Structure formats: C-alpha cells, structure tokens
Length: 456
Image (cartoon, rainbow, N blue to C red; front, side, top):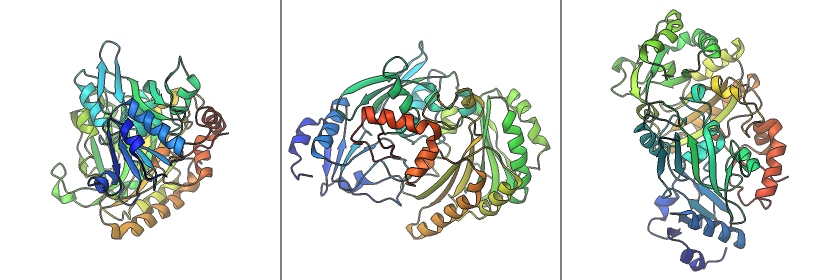
C-alpha cells in the first residue's frame, strides 16, 4: 500500500485515521479484546459517497478491505491488519414510517437506535438480545433473538437494502430488483458489498411479558427435557432461550443467588400478562424454581437487559451449532460442561428458531437452517486476558462434546474463523448458489474479511 493517502483523504467528508494519529489506538479497538488488529487506515464514513470512495480506493490499490458496523463480531472480522477499515459508526439514524409500518435504518446504527425509534410508534423490528449490537452484522447473518418465534428472523422482515458494490456502483436490492443479490444478503453476511441502509417491516410490539426463571443445576436434565417438549409446540407468541449461567451480582436478583451457577430460561411473550401466565402454565409442573422474574416491560428494556454485563473490551471465544433435538446423551454432556462455567460471563444459550422461522423454506433465503429447533452458542467470556486460554479450552471442549449430537453447520454470527468447510456446511444446499451470486457481484473477492464465500 502506498504511504500517500492524500488522494483518499481528499475525497472523504468523514475522518481518515492513520497509524500514529492521536485517536488511532481507540479507533482500532474491537468489542472482543481477544482480537488485536492493526489496520493501516480507518475511514469513519459519514455518507454513501465516503463508502464509494473507500471501496474504489481499496479496489484500485489492491488494499485489504474490512467493513465495521457495530463491531460485535466475535472473530473481529470488522477489522484487518495492514488494510483499510470502512467504519460505519457515524452513519447512524432511523426513519420510521408508521403508515407503511416500515423503518429505514442507516448501516452504522445499533439495535438500541432502532428499538428507541420504533418504540415511540408502538412498533418493533425483531433483532437480537443485546442493544449495542450492530444492525448490519446481525441482519446480514440472519438475526436471531427474543421475537424470532413470533416475527421470524430479522432477514424475514427485511424489505430492501441500499448497497455499495465491489465495482463502486450503488444499487438497491429487494424482491423487485436485483432479487438474486437480495436473496444472498439475507444470511450470506458481508460478502456482497457494503450495506449503507436497511428497510425493515415493523411489528406492533410495544410491551412484552418477559424475564428469567432459574433452577438448581441438579434439575438441569429434567428442565432441558421439559423445555424441549414445551418449546417444540408452543404458540408463536412465546419465546424462551435456555441457558447455563452464573447469576450476576445485580439488584434484580436475590443476594442468596449471586454468583451461583444455575440453569434457566429467559422468556419473552408478546401476549398480555394474563395470556402469558396461561401459556406458561405447563412450567408450573416443572421442578421448583430458585427464582422467577417475569413481568411486563417495554421491549427496549428487555433488549438492553444484558448490555451492562457484556460491555466492550471483554475476552470472547465462541463455538456454535444448529440443534434439532436434545437426546439424553446430549443433555448429559451439556450438563457436564454447562456446570463448569469458567467465569461469571461464560454461558451456553439455546435460541429457539422454530415457530415463525419455520414458515420460510431453506431455499427462500441464504440462511438455510429452517428446520432446526435451536441455534446453540457456547461462549467463553472473561475480562482478564490471563484467562484467555481457560475460556477458549472450556468452549472448545464443550463444543466437541455436544457437536456429535448437532446439525453440521452453525449460525454465522456465532462463529470464529473456522475454515471454508465449516462455512460450506453452514449454508448447505444454498452454498453453490451463493458462490454464483458472489461471482456476479464481487468476482475479485474484494469483500473477503468475513465468513467468506469464494466466488464460483
């Protein structure tokens, strides 16, 4: 890369940060502090023209290019070494159209921006479970969260995207135009260009009945069996993800439970409290809870419940799978490893992806796991870099123990850099079609700092 960046700098309205600049060290920090990357340039784009200028510069000069939205990517794929980072964090904003029931969201926004803007109109866009997550990364990988069973994945509510392509051109992709590209971005990640704006369908969700139930670890085998039985046929209005976790020492939980390892379900119901109680009546016959914290709350409150726990700068190591069924053997292995959480922040979640998610066919979008019951994630998390090996080893050992009972692929947003075969397994029968779309829109693989799909 040439050392004269004046040409690029002169075309940008946003800031171009170089190594040695006062703000460089702060600007290059990633959400996952286990990943340390040192890009040559970081362009804080403020509009689409800035993005076009960066894409053209990278392509013309053979510069490695990474695109960063919210920056929550586990393996740090929103950055690169010795290349150019397109930082979209200043490209933020949400415009809600209450009559059309849509929300247009700038590409650098985080989900808290969307929750705040749509909530004022009594609406919501289904997203994840942490409000500081970037809209772009979560959406392009699929989008699994509290509203999945009721509203589908985030991509199932995506109506259109504005994109800057590898040739520097700008396009709008939807069902009506560039339908092949629109199909690919719904689960295919950042392989096809830089999305500068998303248009979503909103849903009339304002207040939910939500919160956790905790059980003693010795009850975990029965709870997991009962939970599967319940969630398999539960009405779409109710969502609940299963977890092994350490109860954090915060006021909302009794002091007697602080730092105790438990199993639990975090519920979210779009029904009113009375109907929610009726829907959850089967859980009354489950083993006695250690704590039940269900109640009505504004959806943005639920969406931001974990923000304070999972702040930027922790050490993260992810492993994931899709899961169809919890056999007795699988449950035994889950309990063995889930009972040995290596830190207060480490956890295992099973996010249900049935209900509304199953109403799409696997060929309808790039996200292909439309018949699995859960997206499982095992996360070793700790604030101390000295514990990096410990949390990594725990997550890998856990995953190796339960992987034989899982589907072949995993949710791309829950994967580290795990190689081409793992990516192909994740897309299954859709992979070859994705390669064709990649060859059409990015034949030179300019957008390769991601869970990369090689052009056909």
